[in-house]
Image 1 (cartoon, rainbow, N blue to C red):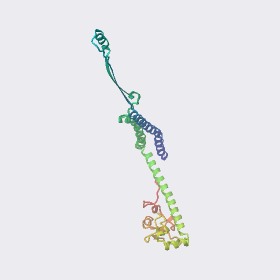
Image 2 (tube, helix red, strand yellow):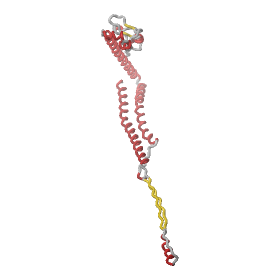
Image 3 (tube, helix red, strand yellow):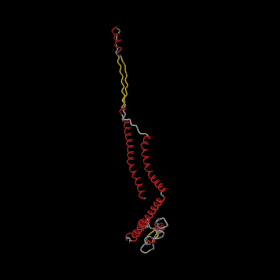
Image 4 (spheres, rainbow, N blue to C red):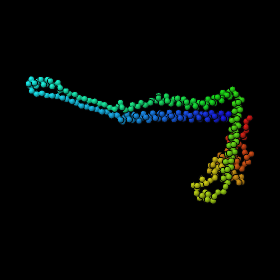
Length: 262
């Protein structure tokens, strides 16, 4: 039963990991699109050139005299008199890139399928829980066995944690019982600033020793406890108290000993 929950959690993690390349690809494409748009837009703004050409032309032939030939030439050559003015403007706009940025709707269309896929992966865990609820409705005895299994497993872990915690407390107490170097005592007496680091510490929470701390009066023990930890230990020293006299309640929030359900 526990393996099923573990498999469901592992499956969810695997699906999220499988979605990670898709998310990275989507972010990469969006970032690349924005970068290319910025580059081409900068080129379009700073590479724009406009050419303006202005020219004027005037041709006039004057024929002097009052003779018949002069009048004939004026009528004939006078038609050649022309006057023109040319203004031409040109630019390189057709040769420049014309980038078109994606609007918010395009980004939403690209991100919506990925978001839906992510939501489906997250909702799959709730679907697995719903599967357990449905199975518990049709098979209540099986559900009861499952609950008892997890309850007993929790009690076993708590008992193991109790042993590890007591072993850690005993180890710290043994380290504190060792004789201190005379140099440490000299520094403790003459250097008030170093006293917080040279004082003994609580064997449970490692808090520095204070005048209110409790020191176990048992010979060859002298374990140090702060008031809160001493109350949590129910005023029993786990270092010098035999293990059979200690209940698991001294190391947990419960007031009862470990009892396995059947």
